[in-house]
Amino acid sequence: MDKKVNVKSLDVEGMLGRLKAKREECGYTQEEVAELLDCERSSISLYETGKRGISIELLFKFSRIYHVSADYILNDKEPEYTSNLISDIRKLCDQYERCNLSPNVTD
Image 1 (tube, rainbow, N blue to C red):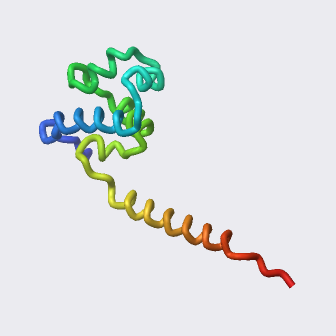
Image 2: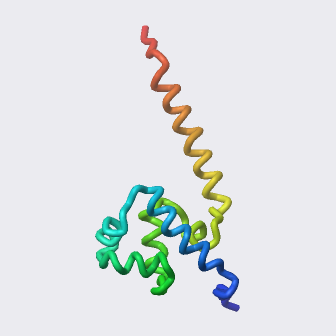
Image 3: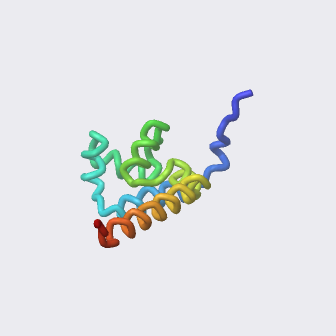
């Protein structure tokens, strides 16, 4: 049995707010995002205000541009694995830095 998304349960206003907030947080203008998406600036405004629907393909494009998951845009939640993965990557980076900062001892 296919699971379908209950669109009525989505917080559409919250999703639209997150789209705009992430754009601003990333330091993009509507014009810059439009250029990245190869569309008109007015389209970005229509997406952010809900006057134009967002396809799944476009949702994923926004998520890549803003460096968040589609889940975050849709419902303000990152998947569990994402936070664990980020934590693991940070630990590996710290270990790498410690290894590269320690003096090389050669005999």
